Length: 491
View 1 (tube, helix red, strand yellow):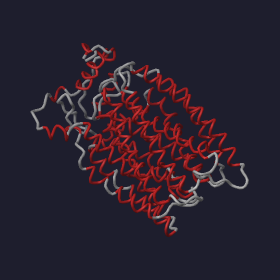
View 2 (spheres, rainbow, N blue to C red):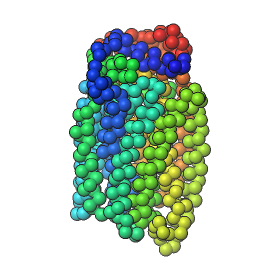
View 3 (cartoon, one colour):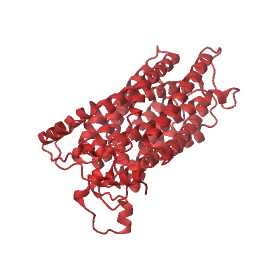
View 4 (cartoon, one colour):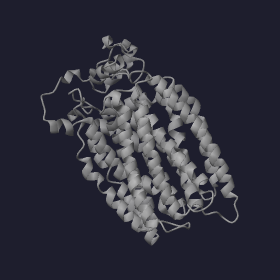
């Protein structure tokens, strides 16, 4: 074991020493309570919920003929999540991530059902109602699943485990989009997908609830070193958790991440409009399938690369971010050319896979999907490099999801406006990405080799942290200030 690996192992257990090594347990219990099993289950839940949601969304407009109603519902969903994600991250620290996760499996199926009813009977109000149920459920799911995927594994495994979680989520898109493609393979004109598509996808989403009961609470998880995690719900006051949330929001690294959280994925709305406006039904279904393949490839690659031992974590962060900037700027330039070409074509173009030039028009959508998924991997990995305890990771995930939802809510809101051209949506997405480059670069250069422990994560002033925690009625142990030096002897 290298010095760095040894230090990571020490960090992973430093806050748990008061719990001691547990009594011997059976092989089955050790497997069932292992972080890997729990992350796989979270990934399967994500597959049935946002995975299926993505499968519908990546056909363009949830499979509908026009994007405006669905974009309006999506804007409503993400608008609720702006406030819901931080709220549920606080509630997860008070009542437990498992309870919040269970709640998060209840709202996606009604939204998919609303698309079915609209597709078959033309009912519009149900789509907006489904947007509300999806927003509430997604707030709970996003706040809890990210905390489990980042907080249950040891530091050295967070890149791989994040890749497993997000990769399994894309399994939902792969299966869902394969079903869509098989049902719509003969539709080589513009239009909407067949309503039978939704029935199968709704059935898959109903599997999320029973799967959620297989998750272990944090205090029952057994890592590979035989130790259990601390129970983050002990002695928690909700107001105290909100104070920690706002202090965490004011830290430099979280504040500087806001632009990329709001702006990076802005292009997703434009991609939905692009597919709807210019591609046939079966090409849109193919787009959903290839997007899932691209995203899964991104999860596998970055899950391996971000945990690579050949470079230090700061170097890995800089290599990854430099590649992101280069590729995204190239893709935006490519897409501006495509949009200008197709928006000015007379008569109106319908691109099918047997149309000349289809590959050039289609490939850019697949590449954007690869990069958008890479962004998720990168941001969650960045969070894991700064923070080590489950309580702080849960609150940080809530903040991250909240600002991601701000960007999605506004971008889908713009996409729902009929008077705004696709080129305007694209240019806004381009500008939003350009704005995030300087701030994110500063965060990347702050990435440490080892994460800080509980007590150091909420700010430089340990005395202030200790005072605030005591005001909330909690016990606290503030680590020595020289912990960040990376010397295991300091622990």
